[in-house]
Picture 1: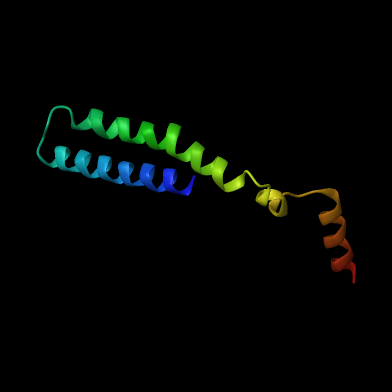
Picture 2: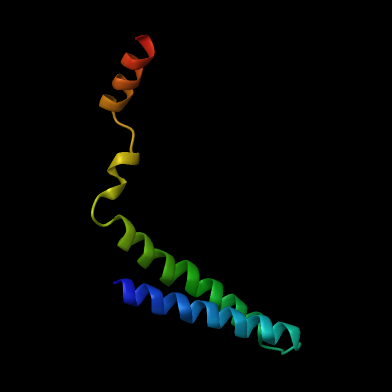
Amino acid sequence: MKTLLKSLFIIFILWMCIGIYLLKTDHPKAEIVMGLGVFYLSFLLMPIFIYHRYRDGKYKKYQLDDEKIKGWMKNKDS
C-alpha cells in the first residue's frame, strides 16, 4: 500500500508540474490538465491515503467518548 501511495503521489506531482508548465506557455488545454490533477488528488489519492492511514483504528485515541470526558472532569476537580 505504501508503494502504491508513493507512486500515486509522484504521478500527482509530475502531473501538476506539467500543468504549471502548460499554464506558463499559455497552452489551451492547461486549465483542463490542472483541473484533472485536482480531481485526481481529491477523488483518488486522498481517499486511498485516508483509508491507509486509519484502517487499523489508529484514530480511536482522537475520538471523544464519555470515559475520556469523565476522566478530564475528574482531573479538573482534583
